[in-house]
Structures are given as C-alpha cells and as structure tokens.
Image (cartoon, rainbow, N blue to C red):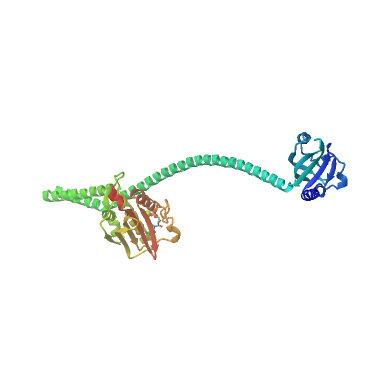
Length: 407
Ligand SMILES: Nc1ncnc2c1ncn2[C@@H]1O[C@H](COP(=O)(O)OP(=O)(O)O)[C@@H](O)[C@H]1O
Ligand SMILES: [Mg+2]
C-alpha cells in the first residue's frame, strides 16, 4: 500500500530527494520533464542546479534554517531549467527523520504553477500600466482644463471688445442714417417751400403796388394772404421737425395712425410719382415710438418708389394692411406690398445689411432697411421680413401685442 501511495504522489507531482547537504539522491520523471535534465545529469548534483540567479541568497538561508530545525518549508520557487527558461513550482520540503529523530534526508514535493505565476505577473504589469495611465490622464486633463480656462478668459475679453466695437459701429450708423434723414427733411422743406415762396414774392409785389396806389382794402387783403402763406411755411417746418425729433419716450400708439402719418409726409412724392396706395386697417395698439414706425414705413414706400422708377413701372400700386395675427402670441402684422418688379434672389439675403444698395451712390445709402430692422427689433421688440415673387415685394413687420398691454 505504501508503494501505491508513493506511486500516486510521484505520478501527480514533481518529486526530488536530497541528502542532508543538498545533494540530489532521487528525482522522478516529472522533475526531469520540467527541468530538462536527465536523471543521470541530476543525481549526485547539488540541488541548486535548478536555482534561478534572480532569487536572493537570503531565501536559501531561511529554507535551510527551517528544514534543519525539522520544520516543513513551503514556498513558490522560481527555478531555471537546463535550456535557461524559467519555471515556477509550488514547493513543500519535508525533512525525513529516523527513529532517533535525526534528519536522514529531505523530500521536496512540487507542482507546476508557471502559468499561474506568469498570468499573475502579467496582471500586475497591466494593473501598474493602468495606474500610470490613469495618473498621466489626470495630469493631462488638468493641463487641458487650465489651458481651457485661460482660453476662456481671453475669449471673454475678446467678445467684450468686439461687442463694444459693434456698439460703436451701430451708433455711428445710427447717426449716419439720422444725418441722411436730416438731409431728406431739408430737401422736403425746400420742395414744400418752392411754391409758397413764389406766391409770397408775387403777393408782396402786388401789395407794394396796392400800397402805392393807396388801396387800403387791397393792402389788408394781401397782407392777410401773405401772413397765411408764411404760417403755412412755418407749419411745414413744424411738421417735419416733429417727425424727425429724437429721444422720445416709448408710448402706446395706434399702428394705423403711424402708417397714415408716413403716407402724409410722403403725400407730395406719392402724387407726383403717381403711386396708388390702398390701405386696410384693423384698430391695433402697440408700444414704442410712433415716429420710428412711421420712419420705417417711409423707408419702405421710398424704396418702392425707387423700384417703380428704376423698372419703369406704369401702374404703380402699394397695398398696406394692418392685421392681428395669433400664432405663439398676438401680433400686429403690417404688410407693405408693391408691384415694383421684385428683388433678385442674389440680393434678397443682403438687403438688411448696412450699406447694401443696388442704387447709384448718389441715390442709395444702403442704410434704410438696416435702420428699419433696428427700429423693428430694438424699438418695437418685433421683426421685419421680406418676400418677393413675380414682380412683387412684400415687407412684413410683426410687433407683439402683449408687450403693449403689459406695461
Ligand atoms: N420694394 C423694393 N423693391 C425692389 N428692391 C428693393 C425694395 N426695397 C429694397 N430693395 C433693395 O434693397 C436695397 C437696400 O435698400 P435700403 O437699405 O433702403 O438702401 P437704399 O435704398 O439706400 O439702397 C435697395 O438698394 C434695393 O436693391
Ligand atoms: Mg432705401
């Protein structure tokens, strides 16, 4: 039975025996297989023939100390085979004692754990790599964060600077357009005055004649006529300056009235250019500056006039409607439609840009629609849009109604 036990152990394990000084006295086939040495090469050799040079000498000190003290020594040993390759074995060394308790020999029973150890090493290596990667990643994230923070700061500064620049630019354009309006106002007054001035000089001439002739009644009549003409001229100035006055407070005003005012200001132009204007109003009030909306309408009508002339349109029609619209809230919608030839596709996306004009430099500033958009968006909290098809152009102004009632 003992022999059977011995065989069972030898078949399944790597077994060797040494004498008390470490000289090999027995090896089984498994030992030969794993070490690569033959039995002949091993027997009579010191057991350190399979020692791996990596293993520190101190390890063997402890080994010998343990087994010489008749204790069992257990370890996972790193060994070197004949061909120089490394193998790992889980080792148990047991001292064998005689009847008197003296050590006769040592028996070492091992099993191969090379794969497990290698896996473990690989795992440890990967773990370490991961840890390092983690650290370097963290560092990189930190670096990038600081970089981004710095970038953010400079960006903020740049945006602020650009905004300031833009505001400045808008102010300049605003004044340019005011100046243009002022020029238009003077031209309008001059136009309006031409006739009464001639009338006045004629009346004064007749008055002088009547005075010299001593015709008191005639003098009185002519004097009153002159006074009326002058009053009329003064009214013209009043009308226009009111219209172009700056810095007014926002108020509720009737949209239709504002449109009518624009048409009145342009009355002369509309009749001499033979433009027919049809209007259709719903009674709506919005919040803003009535003169500013009138200016927008004036800009639009003048653009239509320019297009009528440029395209030699004979039947000149402008339709203006003011209606209430309900979609995502209530709006006053003003539509101004003309049949002046339409706007080319390549231009339509640019017409609201400042300084964009298709007119001769003496006629167009390219500021009319830009200013109109500014007024609609900033002054009236609304929008302005354009549609064009088959020779007609429609501008659509949308102003929210709630705003007007909210205040
Ligand atoms: N009703 C219209 N019909 C045709 N073209 C138009 C009309 N309104 C505007 N435009 C085009 O939009 C351009 C820009 O208009 P605007 O900003 O008022 O500047 P300007 O009148 O000084 O050219 C015009 O030059 C013209 O080409
Ligand atoms: Mg214009």
